[in-house]
Image 1 (cartoon, rainbow, N blue to C red):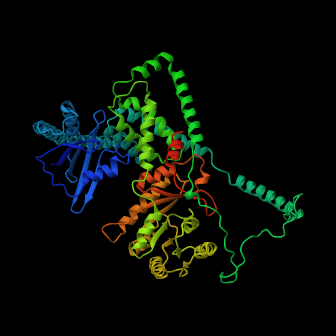
Image 2 (cartoon, helix red, strand yellow; image 1 turned 45 degrees about the horizontal axis):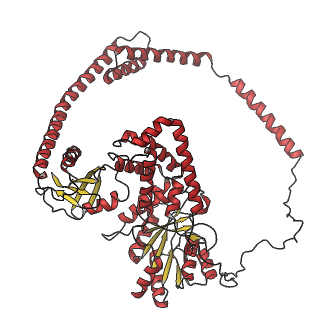
Image 3 (cartoon, rainbow, N blue to C red; image 1 turned 180 degrees about the vertical axis):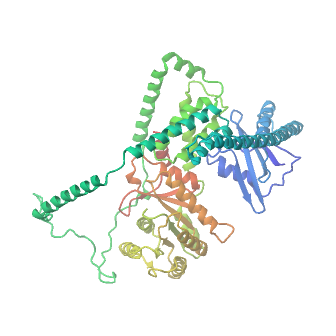
Length: 619
């Protein structure tokens, strides 16, 4: 039984709800559908599962893109209603006939819906009965086929030729029996058995006539031994001289006496560390301008349009652009969407994400009237561009400086936890974030909670001394959750405004390390959980982020599990135009990209330019 059926506009105005079904929906499934699915360009999916305490709903929907209407049906997930899709299409067809943009009340639609629901339920019952009637017939025919196979097998076994082994005859008859059961003719089974017999005779003949001679093997071994002996004798007679590498001397410069520029340290690593000089303003505080790049891209798009017009023919392209197409259908959009999907995948977007995006764009365009003087390809590209901007634009504030001051007024430090897989640059980018915060006169303390990897504490200690900020460390083989808790207590006592917690790199399938990470987050309740990921990854970005979020949710001890809050993309300067990892990560997690690492120095940290990323993806 349906829980609720709603009709509302894309602007959020509810036009009609079924009063007989009632409005007692537990939780907020409609709001969650809009926020988590429709606004994030997942409208190409067929259904959405909503879980709340004590209830599990399934939501299905359809669009009327020309009128800008959304039809949503809600029902209990355990029921598996078969008529919901058909009911939605019928409601969409009937409601579109009486829809008037000036009306906001449709009480007269109650009777129509009641009739449509009855028709859909009757059809579903008829389908169930037809399936139930069809099942015994199929079972009976299957038994008959099995009996025929057994009979054929027994007859074949009795009609074996004299001298033929029983095992081979049994295999041939069973093969024939299998063919009979699958519905093939007897002739096919006989041909296969004959072919198998021919192959068997050939194999037997080859094994009898071509036996391997042992004497030949001994001769080959003796030849091989002689060859190896000669090789060894040559190598002993002429030993290779060890050539040492010489230093390169440049013509116009004096020879360098020392090439090792590492800082001198004592045994504990506590002294003789040179403090790093101010490297200038961080790229986080600089505005980027992409006017020339966008102009080049506009020129490229114009060239593509001209080339396509030449291929299509002058008259047909002009007529279609002037007249337009009455209403867009899915078959009209498929060529443009396929080309767009291939283009996104070449930009390193995960295949699953590219396919879902194209499905969502298709769902938003089907049934829409195409404007005059426009091509389908340009219409699809415009819709995709709007969808990408909507996905990549953060839906909440990512101003960390403002959040730091808000938390400071509460008398506690702002805690940031850096998580991610191995080797993505968590410690290095943690130092970049610390440098950026220091430029804004915010006191920072580092917490060395990577007690698993050798050298991790020393690496963070070096960054802390260069930046002249305190570091809290307890060495190795300690519980990182306890170390982080003590670091936060120390920061509260010393008056540090921000605590940057470094954690061990871990693969998303490593259960013990993921359990330790979940314990650290649940025990300390940080203000921000940053996932540090490489911009080089493609399909693996989906697996990493989805499994990190899933593990954090499964291993959480509270009802409101803490998941990934933001993303820090590293190695962004090495990917050229392959910027698809940013889109894949944001789409799969819903978390915004807060920082982008683009170099080796402390200043190489910047914000994500959404317009630049979108233009690069569609270029």
